[in-house]
Image 1 (cartoon, rainbow, N blue to C red):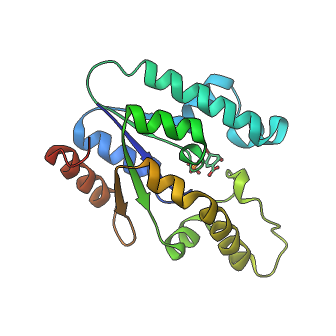
Image 2 (image 1 turned 180 degrees about the vertical axis):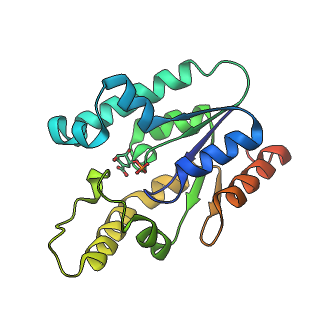
Length: 183
Ligand code: S3P
């Protein structure tokens, strides 16, 4: 079984993925880390030298490779915030994984991303702006509007993460898996 975690940047996919893989004693693959290792560059380097379109191609290739090699047993895949928002990756996740959307409210996302935008090219901001937080909030809302329906359509379960620890969220996912609520 492959469990994939999707959701906006800063919702906790990587950290919840680690906690969940620990609870299930299973393999964990972080898609962004896989891409960085495969292409020998960081995500910001890929964006700045090749652009977003090229990154999305790499993301699709990487996801296909990961899904082709999961083998027996359980694997948790934490995706990037844009993975499920691109048609082909969404299709791969829907078809081959139990896909869980970690849904965070705008305040949680702003709080989690405020000091952590450097490695996230999709949140490009002009750091000289006085109203940095407001600019970040607007950027998140703008991207979320484009992505929310894709997240909901791709996932078979949605978990609200506001106010929960990574471990609490991971435990909820484990319950879903054990109850067989999701595929
Ligand atoms: C992206 C999210 C990032 C990373 C890349 C693009 C996005 O992953 O894949 O910078 O389009 O939302 P995180 O969600 O782990 O930050």
